[in-house]
Length: 265
Image (cartoon, helix red, strand yellow):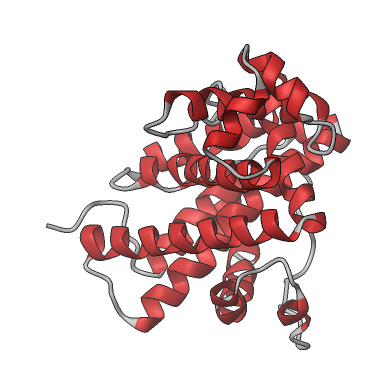
């Protein structure tokens, strides 16, 4: 991977505050995020870390979790259809055929297709949390690098293309459908609260600064989880990237901010 020359400095104009796709809590931590990105970019020692080459792992489509079995069937069928055909073409009939049922049954639980689509976005956000945060708590540096690089490779490998398409379709749909956008914001805000509880439990960190740092890191991980698949959909060259330096820089960032790799006791 070609290493950029020079140093990176964050913008002086707060243009990031004008982005409507970010929730308010994300906007409050945007300056912290930019400082983190600058610190990572200028971490020369991360470039000297020996490359790790773990294999990618399969990432299945999210599974809906609902006490109602019929709702779960429709939700899981919707993920399949959206990933294959796109959000706008995910018609009620196509989802019903994938589920092997009549779509009329879903109206017993939801007032409309829009209500249904808004509800299933929560499963996508839960997958973000399960892949981006939970497995890394308590990992050693070597294990962290292995999992981080494997995660990046998994987001780009051909076997996980349906997962990539689903993520991109939901994000694009949020730009055109206000209810989907609100649902994603609400679920991401809830996931941020979960992150706050994790750092309080595992690291004893509850200060306002720790919360800002955690929120900024969560935005960074979310952007990776969408940005990498987006680039992969446009270019196969991303498959050749060695993600070790970026993973090492992120680990150093976590350590410097007090998010130690071992659990506090």
